[in-house]
Every structure is written in C-alpha cells, then in structure tokens.
Length: 148
Image (cartoon, rainbow, N blue to C red; front, side):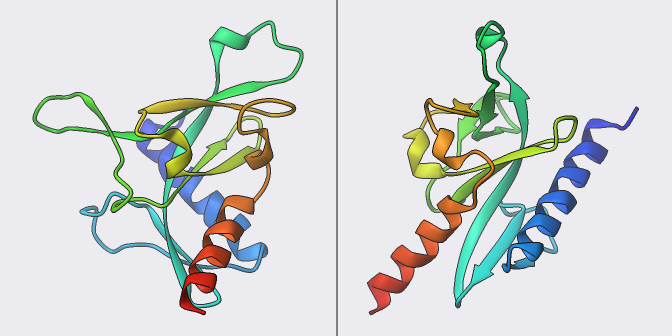
C-alpha cells in the first residue's frame, strides 16, 4: 500500500498529465514553501492550483449518484488546526480520486472561506465542476477580459 505522501505525489502527477493533455502548460514549484502544488498556464494566464484527495462523502452513502468531499485547507504547523486557503495563496482546488479515477476543479472562491465542501457528480452542488476544467477556463477568460 502506498504511503499518504506517495498518493499525494501520484495525484499531482496524474492531474498534471490530464492538464497537459487538455492543452494547459503545467509547472511545479521547486520548494514546498508555497500553498499551491502546481502553476497552470494558458494564454499567458497563470493559475495557482492546490491538488487534494477527492473522497466519497459518507453522509451521502445512500445517494443514487456519488457525492464527494473536498478539503480546501492546510494544517497550521503550530496549532495542528485546519486553516482555509486564502485567495492570495490558491486560485483553484483540484480534487482527484485515485481509486475511481475522477476529478473536480473548483474555484477557491466557491467555498467562501470554508475548509471543505461537497461536490455532487451529477445534479447537485458543484456538479458543473465534476470532470470539467471549466473553473480553469473561467479563470483564464476573466483574467483576459480584465486585461482588455
């Protein structure tokens, strides 16, 4: 069984590969000092991406379609408490489920300062971001329209 760190590394590599195939340029920071895992670029616009584990939400175990939980926080080293990411740190959270091979890309702003949130695979909260890069496209389009 892979370690938690190995699974995290694998998630980042898988997501980077999917993004490359979708036409994005992907870079990885050299140090662990940043809150983001990847820099994703398209049309000159850079997006700070944090890659997280996308887990089935046990609260929805009786749901006819899968519902996932996505953490949007980091652990404070001094207190051990979860702290929500700030907009200055991360632009988009991408969750990837290794076992089910599914992903979601959600703008950080969509979580409104919370440390986690649900993502429905169909017909529900954030379902428009399931298996979609629309959050990245929206970010790029908004940035380009501000420059125009």
